[in-house]
Length: 72
Image (cartoon, rainbow, N blue to C red):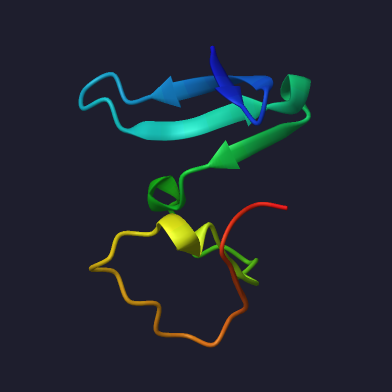
């Protein structure tokens, strides 16, 4: 179990390489799926960038979506 925002989460990883596949959170009410594991293009699109205050300094955000430095 991993704590996510103070709540327990269950992470599922690839048995071969250890990459995160998905996490079950909020007592099973939600599943966070790693985008790279999807076969088809997702129908929902990003609406904002979060936690940009701690992004890697070498990564440049190139779109005009809203940016939030931290949670809350």
